[in-house]
Length: 275
Image (cartoon, rainbow, N blue to C red; front, side):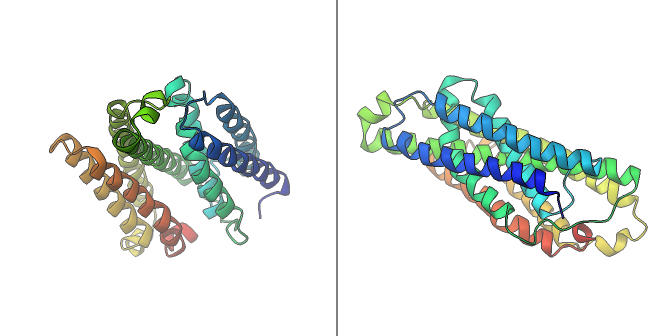
């Protein structure tokens, strides 16, 4: 079981994510007409607690903290916040946080559920290095996909405002829908590249296992291949067939919802990721 100290630090981060979510409700009600500086600061403070928790866990384990569902979930959440904080340096993109905080709070509450923080065996040095990089790249890719779905939700909000509340869209500080479309596309490509590299490293790691044939039909491997195909399809739809707009935004959101809803189940059904 993880130490009480790092879990308490993560709990503090989740509490601040919850405060950010509550504050985001007021931003929604005001039509995003006020600078989002307060929410950005809240998420920055939460990120500090979150990073402290992961740092303490990582130093204690002496490798990337991705050994179980608790650690993998906190890592994915951390990548979403870290990416947002970089993107949020641009004033008109800070409102991603108002859309992200409910997701961060929900995932954080799930991560704190009992039974997820189960100790795992100590891997070999080669396996540890490959597994850590593999897991880190996958977590970063899921973070990019999560932000792409949040940007898609912002797109739908602006599209709705333009259609039904034109004055609200004009005075809102949200980015224009054309820029949001670009952000969605770039985040999808970034996430797909990270996912591809991470899966390739995972295949190399698997090739070093003596009993690798046993894991060829592993649930997490099959699930990862399916996620890779889903996002490849989205990229092809956008860049080959110029698919954009409301329908594409829903597909992006739906794809990440699928990842969120099936990620933990695929881990639990995977002997490879529970040894």
